[in-house]
Amino acid sequence: MVRRLNISDEVQDVFQRMARLLPEQLRDDVQTQNSVCVFLKLGGEKTARQYIEIINMQFRKTMEEEVENIEVPDLDNSERELYVSSQGDDAEDSESDDLDDDDSDDDSEMY
Image (tube, rainbow, N blue to C red):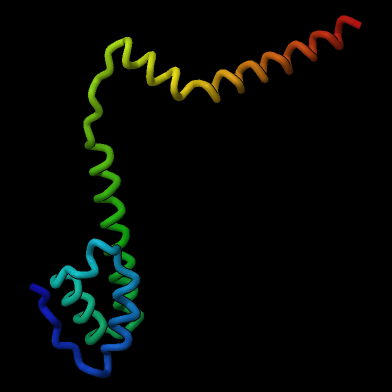
């Protein structure tokens, strides 16, 4: 069930514009919408934008903490080798390129 906010016509357009600045996951959150409306009505558009910036910073920080807390299962040696080999093709090419570059420098010194 979607709950509609009672927003006066004078701030409706500004509120709709500002709602787009919120993280997508919080756009339908009634508490967040009410808070933005309060800042908009009491402090104006500038104050409401500052509040939305704070919401965005807190949301990013929360998401970063959640990502850091994700547990990655330990890989045994065979799984680790498979993972490294699937990821390492590019790394091996770059290492061999580096070695080739080093060899070319040595060749020039020999002549």
